[in-house]
Length: 63
Image (cartoon, rainbow, N blue to C red; front, side):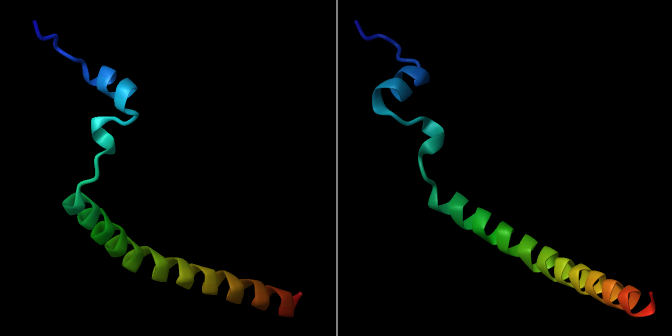
Protein backbone atom coordinates (compact mmCIF):
# COMPACT_ATOMS: atom_id res chain seq x y z
CA UNK A 1 0.00 0.00 0.00
CA UNK A 2 1.20 3.47 -0.84
CA UNK A 3 1.36 6.03 1.92
CA UNK A 4 0.46 9.67 1.43
CA UNK A 5 3.59 11.75 2.00
CA UNK A 6 3.26 15.15 3.63
CA UNK A 7 5.18 18.04 2.07
CA UNK A 8 7.15 18.58 5.28
CA UNK A 9 8.37 14.98 5.02
CA UNK A 10 9.66 15.70 1.54
CA UNK A 11 11.35 18.82 2.87
CA UNK A 12 13.05 16.82 5.63
CA UNK A 13 14.29 14.16 3.23
CA UNK A 14 15.21 16.31 0.23
CA UNK A 15 16.52 19.36 2.13
CA UNK A 16 14.31 21.86 0.30
CA UNK A 17 10.67 22.82 0.26
CA UNK A 18 8.33 23.35 -2.66
CA UNK A 19 8.70 27.13 -2.23
CA UNK A 20 12.46 26.86 -2.84
CA UNK A 21 11.94 25.75 -6.43
CA UNK A 22 12.96 28.53 -8.82
CA UNK A 23 10.45 29.83 -11.34
CA UNK A 24 12.12 31.87 -14.13
CA UNK A 25 8.94 33.78 -14.93
CA UNK A 26 8.52 34.80 -11.31
CA UNK A 27 12.16 35.86 -11.05
CA UNK A 28 11.79 38.03 -14.16
CA UNK A 29 8.62 39.62 -12.80
CA UNK A 30 10.28 40.36 -9.45
CA UNK A 31 13.32 41.86 -11.16
CA UNK A 32 11.09 44.10 -13.29
CA UNK A 33 9.15 45.20 -10.22
CA UNK A 34 12.29 46.05 -8.26
CA UNK A 35 13.65 48.02 -11.23
CA UNK A 36 10.38 49.94 -11.53
CA UNK A 37 10.46 50.78 -7.81
CA UNK A 38 14.12 51.81 -7.99
CA UNK A 39 13.40 54.22 -10.85
CA UNK A 40 10.89 56.01 -8.59
CA UNK A 41 12.64 55.84 -5.22
CA UNK A 42 16.30 56.55 -6.04
CA UNK A 43 15.75 59.98 -7.68
CA UNK A 44 13.50 61.00 -4.79
CA UNK A 45 16.15 59.98 -2.25
CA UNK A 46 18.82 61.84 -4.20
CA UNK A 47 16.69 65.01 -4.28
CA UNK A 48 16.02 64.81 -0.55
CA UNK A 49 19.73 64.25 0.12
CA UNK A 50 20.58 67.33 -1.99
CA UNK A 51 18.01 69.46 -0.17
CA UNK A 52 19.38 68.37 3.22
CA UNK A 53 22.90 69.27 2.09
CA UNK A 54 21.77 72.71 0.89
CA UNK A 55 19.87 73.30 4.12
CA UNK A 56 22.90 72.46 6.26
CA UNK A 57 25.28 74.56 4.20
CA UNK A 58 22.96 77.60 4.37
CA UNK A 59 22.48 77.28 8.13
CA UNK A 60 26.26 77.07 8.62
CA UNK A 61 26.89 80.29 6.70
CA UNK A 62 24.39 82.42 8.65
CA UNK A 63 25.24 81.40 12.22
